[in-house]
Amino acid sequence: MRNQVTWLAPKSDDGVLERSFALGVSGTIVPGILWLPADPGPSLPLVLLGHGGSGHKRSSRNLELSRWFAKEAGMASMAIDGPYHGERVISPLGPGAYQDLIRTEGIDVVVDRMVRDWRAALDVMATVRSLDTAALGYVGHSMGTRFGVPLASVLGDDLRCAVFGKFGLVQAAGLYEGTDMTDRLTADAGQVSAPTLLHVQWDDELFPREGQFALFDALGASDKQMIAYPGGHRDLNPMAPVHWRSFIARFLAR
Image 1 (cartoon, rainbow, N blue to C red):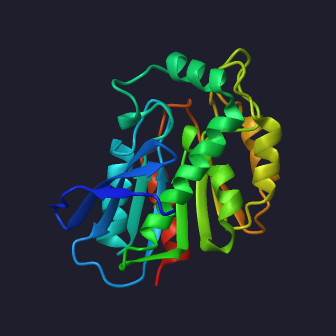
Image 2: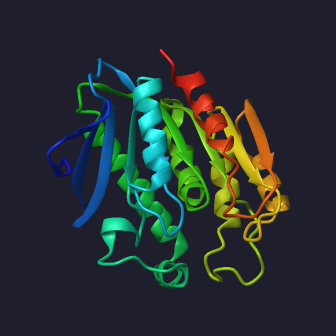
C-alpha cells in the first residue's frame, strides 16, 4: 500500500518554488519540503539535505543550499525532519533530551526508521514529474552524517555523490553514551560507492579528527576526497559550503 502524502500550498520566493508535505509512514507523519526552480524542466536531479542535531528541515543551511541548487544549478532538493526534531516534536528539544530519547529507543532502531522515512519520501518524489530520483545527491553533516551514511549505503547506483562531515567513528569520551554506532557506521560506510567528499573540522571537540579520518578510510567509494578546516564542531568556514555544492553539481549537472 502506497504511503499517503499531503502537499501544502506551494510558495514561490525569488525564483525558488517551495512545496511542503506531510507523509504518512507506518502510522507516523514525516514532515518534509521539496524545493524546485521556479520553472522546473523535466528530470531534475534531486539533492537530499540532512540537517544537524538540534536543527530541522528548514534550517538556514538547508535554505541556503536549496536556493543555490534551484537558482544556480537548476536542481531540486528535499529535506525531512530527523527523529525528535522539527515538526516531529511539539517544541524544540535540547541535545541531552533528544539523545536520551534516541538512547532509550535504541540507536539502530532510530537509524533504520530514518532510512525508511527517507526512502518513503523518495517513493513520493518518484511520482513528481519534474524529478529524476535515479540521479540523487546527499549533503548532511554531524547528525546529517549519522543518518546519511546508512541511507547512502542502501541507495545503490541512484546515489551519484555525497557530502558528509563533522562526524566520525570515534566520539568524545562521555558524549551521548549509549548512542555509539562505530560498528554500524563502519559497515555502512563500506557500502557507499558514490563519489564522496568528507568535511573535517580539525579541532572538533565532539568527534576527534582521528575518528573522522577513520570514517574517510572506511568509505567504500573509489573516488573520495577530504577537505579540512581549523576550528571546533560548530565553526564553519564560509568557503566550505561552496566546496560542498560545487562537488554535488559536478556529478549531477546535466
